[in-house]
Length: 301
Image (cartoon, rainbow, N blue to C red; front, side, top):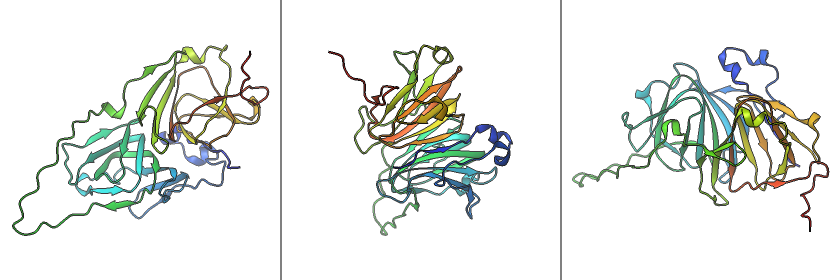
């Protein structure tokens, strides 16, 4: 059975602590270390196949200060697959259109979120050392946007309609408060989503909710595979046919978890605020399980 892949990427590392000092980065062979390309951008492949036309993949890109920051070199391009970008550090500037328009580009800072639809022309640059987390559905290969030569004497093209879509500051909509005191932020995807749609949302558990010790461990499974990125606080996660807290591990800010479809897992949170982002294809669903038996609860007559 496919293994759960876990990656501890503590954001304190970005403050100057080396990866070697922070301890082992990977606990699964499917992860690779950072590899720097000829353009100076480093990439870490987390999970998935970024060349598959239907595959869900996750990877991270790191732009050192001075690399990718020259906006005059921004090139219009597109991807065959849809990308959802979470900014972990620095500033990522993105604009849409078949030509670079500096006035139309928007800046996304730490925890910012932006969707790059498949086939849509766009351009970007960075400000300072920047690191992004990318969730892609379909091929993520960069392709230059073609420039079509107009015949001599042809009438000029009409300008495209103005995009009136409202963009939330930093790409983040408002939180929706839930019944249990937590909150959810729907980032991308319809409600309910289609079975092939890449969705993203964030969950927020305030300190007062996590401090309530009467809340039991959450034990369940999903129909689909979910990717979890921890933004704040500590997230305890474990798998098994029953709840065994000793088998769980703690994941702090920057950590990444791949939770394959159908995997029985349990989670809980320590005192203090916790925020995490989930990316998935289609409706995950959530089937609750009995912590003792590992089976769905039996309805009483």
